[in-house]
Image (cartoon, rainbow, N blue to C red; front, side, top):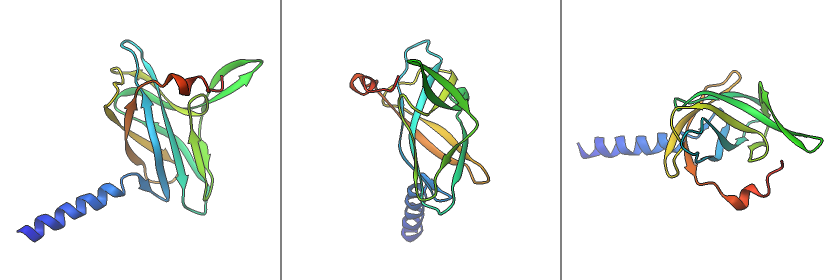
Length: 152
């Protein structure tokens, strides 16, 4: 009985270790910022590393905590910052796609409750022709020093 239990625990640990890697895509530094009560939008920032030798299209995300999750990019035109919904972003072969504050990000719209510091939420990442990658996103406090360097 002990051997079966130990084997089962080791299997769970092993599977959990692969939870953030699928199809040669590795998730690094995923997080969202806390939101205020009544705020119905939020953002997820994440780095996607592609360990494979083919470019992969990141085509979207979904989560039960929001009505919609979209890929957005940020553009500057005449000192005015604007967001654009993107159908996909490419994760280069043997490279990395970084979604950062003030740049590309996953926009959460229609939040069902505030994002609270210290909590996590599930997020499914969708890739063209590949299996979804399911992750848990930690919620961090808003870092004022980080915001002053945003490209806006």
